[in-house]
Image (tube, rainbow, N blue to C red):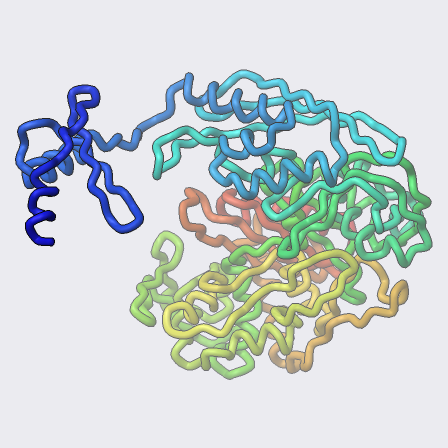
Length: 557
């Protein structure tokens, strides 16, 4: 056996030569291994040379800015494939093929959109705008749809290839990631909303109220006695705080009616005021009842006034002051430290322009918005002291407001060390919106928290949020004194000039990472009106949000 094996081994077949290379087939149990290598090289050399060659020939990932050709070619591939219904090809040209496949498939299957025509516009850098024309068809009824959108081309970091940077808004500008387009029975009947005087509210009349009308329909469409129609709608994702939105109405439903608390005169004035300031928002309340009289946003796609989640800056000092007075850590007319700097929890805090007040009172520190006057008291407070004050006295941060449309009722989390100190001046983890801060001023004016509402609770027998306790008469009196002094002589004085009667105010500026100017805040009351506003990236509150709020307070009292 051994002799025959040696003979067999000596009888090797001459290797075949393919393209100047030697192909050797090595037999084994049930599989074959093929190797290509140049003639005349030792086995070890062949292995090493092959590895080195593979490494040398490994394609390099392209980096750097995209060329105009790459942007145009990628955009054309995506748009052409989408228009032709080749979903897999279109999706493959994006940065998230799975998400793109789902949404583009639903565009035809769920939204019932046909005859899609996509026309690219003029490229600007890596961005390509395009127009969309299509037809919505459902059970024999059709209507045209036309809108504009855009896409941005980016370089894939793994492959170096250009890809359409995928977001849902590429398909339609009203879509956010997680949203879908659906055509069918709306499920929610339309509504007609009316102001407190019986006038119909429309988005054409009051542009800020588009999101409010969406919210009213979502909440009261079925309860208001209407009948659903056939519509193309944006259905929000499960984590979205926004309401569904109608894009095309194929057949009209029968609307129900909803009466709101909005004052048409104040609403029109609020719309006019925010139109003067980019990224501004404002809310006006009636402190004695909690009725929302006006709400307006310069930007109409998201209701920042009701749903915003922003650091409120020094307007938070209204709540903090009530806490310090309650705990005998401050008193309006007693001396209170206001140094240039104060270090707590490893952070060094300072006042605007590093000012200090020597021998001043707490009222002087509040009126001038001295940060260190509040930071210096952090060590004397428990980690949950501010949270409890916000919840128990001002009705905030419990996620239980029911105003009639989607809203955010503020967040004052329990924090420690430097973050606790920052929360005292409206930074750290504290988050509010104009609705919340208008409610804070309303609570001071009336003496009791009354949950704001846009639709009377008698309409649907819902339960409004309440606060578990009220401020003592002594604390309330001092807090009103602080706000009145600030309105007359402090940082709010210029904006509140000409606002007479029972008034109080507080300014605020909130620093935001990556933003050159702070968000400007202002909250105030006059008689039975309370209002608050914010101008994002606008600067100091007294100069930006202050005039908006003051103008509305001048209209009533």
